[in-house]
Image 1 (cartoon, rainbow, N blue to C red):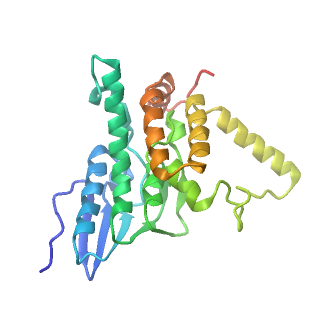
Image 2 (image 1 turned 90 degrees about the horizontal axis):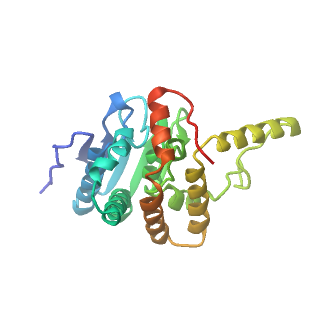
Image 3 (image 1 turned 90 degrees about the vertical axis):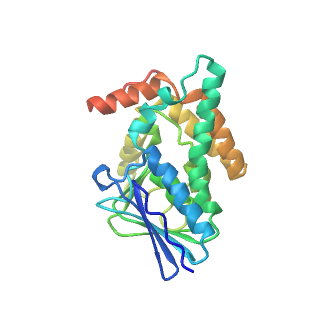
Length: 261
């Protein structure tokens, strides 16, 4: 007896035939930005794949021009209302539970007993990196580009990238051997390029940069589960900050963000 895939999804499609379950992120007009509904539906889809015998392998892809532009900023801007509470401690606990729930969505790909293959094209940004890092295998087309963008909205990535990505590629990428991130042609280009990188980092949220370094260093010596738990606790304390508000305001006004030290 063949089990019919759920057909009530609003943000993705799920089809299954010949033992292959195909999950497609389906908000092409929003570059497949991951709103709250999509997070919930991704977990439901991969729970279905896990528990459906005829689904032997899963392919995750995106419709439209891009795989995904990452987490929908409306989800971030709505956090205050979602966790509102007169008690500061209870509000922070609600935030921590929200982060843990988003983490669990991505962990559902790891929990799935069937192999999950990511097919990536166009942009794969922010939460998209979290998503593909939880897959078993990743394939891309030549037009694919990858970017960890959480720091650009004033936050430390907290749903898996800083825990999973270093385990996939190491802390450097060095063309063939993973020793360096990039090779410049001349010493002059090296100095100019590294200077540009340093200026870019200096222009980001200091809280987010410090948090990112803290998480990467911590994850190097701890399990994925430990790292996920730590970042949830970290961001329960650090996420709601002046930096987050400034980053969102700057994005809305299409101006450079200005952060305090």
